[in-house]
Amino acid sequence: MKKSINDLKKILSECTYEEFINIKDILKEDNRKSVKKLIDKFENKFELYTKKIEEYNNRKIYETELYNLNFKAIAGVDEVGRGPLAGPVYAAAVILNPEVDIIEIKDSKKLSHIQRTIISEKIKNKCMDFSIGIATVEEIEKINILNATKLAMKRAIEGLKTKPDYLLIDAINLEDINIPQRSIIKGDDLSISIGAASIIAKVERDLYMNKISDKYPQYKFDKNKGYGTKEHIDAIKKYGICEIHRKQFIKNFI
Image (cartoon, rainbow, N blue to C red; front, top):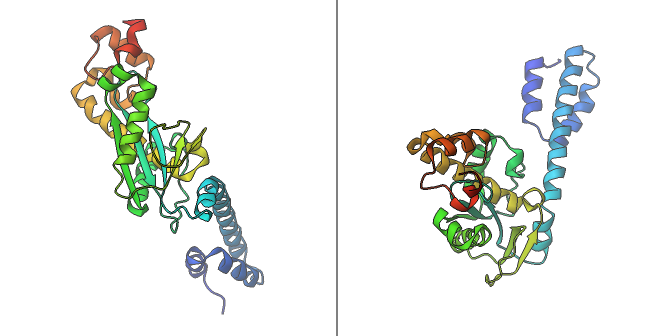
């Protein structure tokens, strides 16, 4: 007796790719058009999923190499907020669980706000450890943005409960951290650990900027996150600056 389309949908939605291959061969004997459409639908779905897995494994290459060298706690480190005219720099350090794949991880800039928020929670729940580090506007003004970025990263690393035995860092070298490290240009797109850190740091900084926007609604920090949009610059010219503006960044137009 042939199964109904609804029954087949349920079976296919719950099967693995390997199981689908076997089921597909059996269903080829079924000449119903609706069954052919169903096979095509799930074939496309599994092809997309397989492509995501392949892309994820390509972004996991640095971690895999280090796991094979017997490093156990690899921390990815990234920052958010070097370029804005206002607000602190946020950094995150994340030690992913090598036994758990989170294939949604990628450069935070390639994700929507909703995607970042969901994936950030998933990372926090499934990783071995994570920590946030912040450098304030006052520190940015005092020691410059590069050194403030390094400071935020160091604070994130020092905040980890699990001591990392290797660091993968996005585009920066931390000279006075006594842990083996590798700086990777565009690391947030090339390493899952750095990508995970970029997502958490972005979500946390955005939450701060949303909250401070309630205090200073005229600058619309909830929309621009402190970056130099025309609307933000016009607001500075109209209202002056507030406590979280970086004076060195805006001296050219006030």
